[in-house]
Length: 293
Length: 228
Figure 1 (cartoon, each protein chain N blue to C red):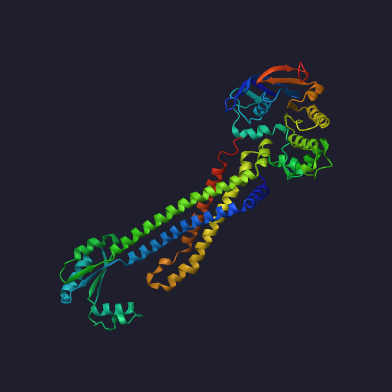
Figure 2: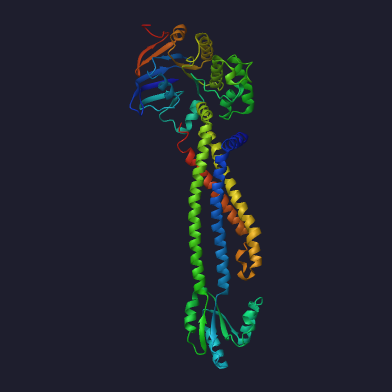
């Protein structure tokens, strides 16, 4: 096969339909950007969940009148529970110190607070976040316990919102990808129309169908890959300029916006792969009935 | 070389183009297919390159049964069957050399072969001096010579010509016929559809006459019409 021939044919076709090609490339880029966005969103959700799951703990706030004996026997009892990993006692003083630390930059929050305003508590870490409600219910009402709090509900709600968001963006990107494939198909149809005389002669002298098709298929895949490259570039730039800065500025969010390079490579591969597929589907749509010798 | 058995061709519009056509053409023959417009000449030519499929009947070309020939083999069949048309079908943005070379390049002939065979064949058709001209700089007869060169450069077993002189004046047509005759003498089977009386009468070759899709005459060393 003549590689040079195919490449020059492809480039010629792309140049001939410059505007259609631009339209096709940008549609692919936008749809893949959305797809990449859902991937990134997935990574963020993953980070959030990991981050929060590590932090899922039950706080059992103790009554001010609880005796030292009550506290230690309660602590002992909870430690015995099979789901529990670790129990820490946080005294009133320690709780106040922690509060001060957390709001270091806004001293007005704690300046007027008496030092014993915050209750002492037992912080309970679990092996599995799923057991949270069960363990919390078991502790509730134990002697010396005033109140039991845990963060599980918030996580569940967050996950639900996130999955809804992901579904919406995914559906949008699929719709756009169909549009992109149709635009690519149209671009190729125009290219075929522009060269119908040549194609007629190629068939006449016995060029094989694949020989005739390959330049057009390359054209579709090339346009789609250009779109994928554009989308990938936008995501990479966003990652270095935006996400990493947000992560540096808003440190309290934890490592939510930091992605490993293998995660980014994976996203890029998905974009490239899906881009190729869109280009091929578009080409096939254009070539389906064409060339029935 | 070419054999058709009871070929019937109906078009989708319902009109019947050929009915019960059985023809045998030997290797190296020169055959005229004559008849008025709409008699089925062009349809007959199209069936031989599998551009159209018959509604019923069998067609054998160059040893291949076209009915059982898979689609992907059709291009290889066509490499053995050169085609020439009334309207030349040249690419206007390519030179004479490039037009002929195109026919070889798209069937993957190496460049060395292209560079050797194209000047040779253009010399044969009498255009050795005009390799770099574009089709619109040539006369009709010269354009048809380029088209014949393209059809024959691959040395096909069969050359099909559908009204090759239809757009040419009588003097030029004679030149084209000499060229086709020369090609025939190399052993190539030539089938030419025409309604040009003078040419058929002067060549005195086998004549197959079609009328309304039927073969009404098959005569060796014939003339255009018995009555004309």
